Length: 238
Image (cartoon, rainbow, N blue to C red; front, side, top):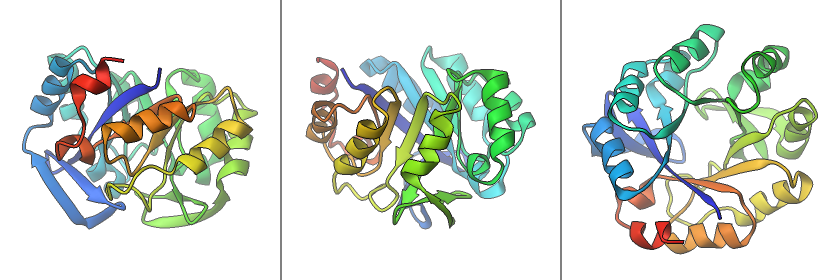
């Protein structure tokens, strides 16, 4: 059964969604990320993906206090990403209650540092962020593309013990155009033991079931939920 992970993206203390990672194309859905998290738990979700978009832009954690409040108000298992550039950021995230952290840019730009964190904190607590645009890994809050191609990038880290990967197809993110199922299948065909979390483009409950049918282990979704396109009862009944 596919793991269903709603997302809360935070800018200025508000729950928002961007389109294709563009900070100028922002939709605000709620003034209280904590209230949204409580609602998600009440509806039956057990896992939550939090993105500190202020942190991604500032290159350090900004919204740790909101993470702390969400963990105090719920029993959700939370992975937290956005702006994690140093060991201090990791320690801050864990101190605020994160169960896992998602790290992308450092894994591209400072490979040995990322590997040292993987060894220090364990593969169960570190999620590799592999966000893709035009076939290349994007970094720094999706503001620039690296020269890293997706599959070789994943191969490097799979060989070094990574087990959890969050892969966002940026061109799909926030568009409600449907997920990049073919891309995720390519990843799973190459690395069948990977716990791949697909992200970007989910537009309906049916999209999530299509990912499940394709053998994708987990999915993150946001805009579709906030715009009422996810039938939560149907989604969580199977």
